[in-house]
Length: 224
Figure 1: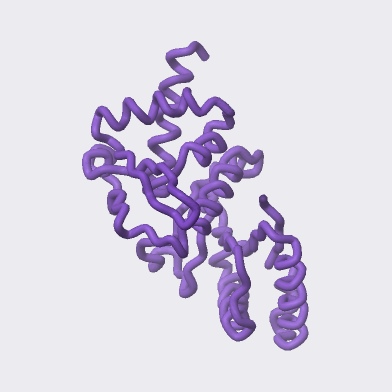
Figure 2 (figure 1 turned 180 degrees about the horizontal axis):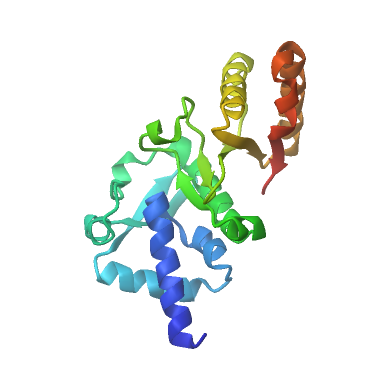
């Protein structure tokens, strides 16, 4: 692959990622392209901004500010996407950290051998209708293999209440029974939270013995 072809591929990867996630940061895109060169990514982003395919916004955070790049209506129409273009006013301080964590995990999955082997597609499930997936509970990401049941991804930066988890886990077990999903994977950046969640799972399957065979399909992983 020559320099021009590599540049075109990198540009398209940036566009595809933004079409999936609406907005992101340069740090996340480094993971998407598997590069450490922020200037290279900045050049691609600057060109896309000049073409009015994306827009650049500075978002104030509690610790300062962060620069984000998001889709425009022009890009949405060009690719006939059903997603809503980037609206900075809709970004919440409360959920931004979680959203960027999900994006980094999404970028990580894209480079996995299994992801490429099964020709998976990543669906950002934070927004949009879930009717076509047959899901009652909204996961953070959905891995959609070409010819298999879905894999639901949950990104947990904090723990929900035990009653809330009881309903969610039972919903996932019913979907596994119905063969609508293959498994569910819970990701934590904090090992202590992951250990506490494992105990919640153990107690859950002791209480709901009819789903005990599904315990191995509710996986707990660490991603930092």
